[in-house]
Length: 236
Ligand code: ADP
Ligand code: MG
Image (tube, rainbow, N blue to C red):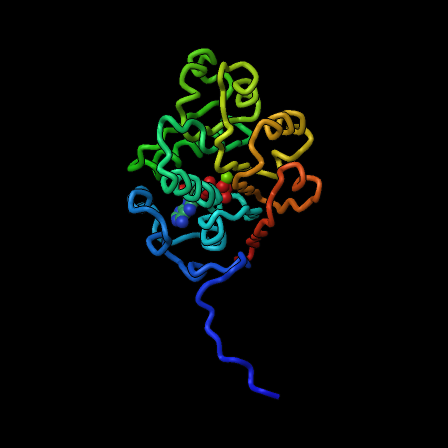
């Protein structure tokens, strides 16, 4: 039997889940923009476990189904890839909505919007918080078409999809469902299905929640492409 050929893999033809950044522990080691690194420092240095496990994949455009308990840092795990995707694509005011982040409650949407503003403070990408009852929806309608990142509750987003003239998300790059297990619940089913039906299928989708949602039904609804399942357990 001849010895096995000595080969070195220098590139991969297929996306097999490999990432050269899998061993990173610090945000500064990630292949992200200087602007984002400046937004993260000095508050954030070491990545939490869900961030360490998911960012190497989400940053290269893969779909993610991530589960980790409340308080484990899931917000940064999706805010960073959203910002980087639009920044790398040189997204600007004329490009419209590039990312939609949906959260089940106004309070959670508000919190993650604050985090987005902080991490994105060096960027010129625009973002808006669209939640029911916050302010007059008509005022919002005038500016929503100029926003690059929408942070919203399902009801308010759907209201814009149905009522705002020229509301456009055909260029959407990244869809995020925060608290995905709650979002996929039957309470939001009607709204979420109506939203998804208006989004382009070719996009990156990031789902994060406290519990893993693997139901084939849910995944079909969201048209996930070969997602990375990342689960971080309580003992860690
Ligand atoms: P989750 O969505 O998983 O419940 P959050 O994203 O809301 O968690 O984060 C919980 C808290 O942890 C927040 O106060 C956040 O500022 C903090 N946090 C997140 N990531 C890090 C990190 N890498 N280093 C230090 N603190 C972090
Ligand atoms: Mg959260």
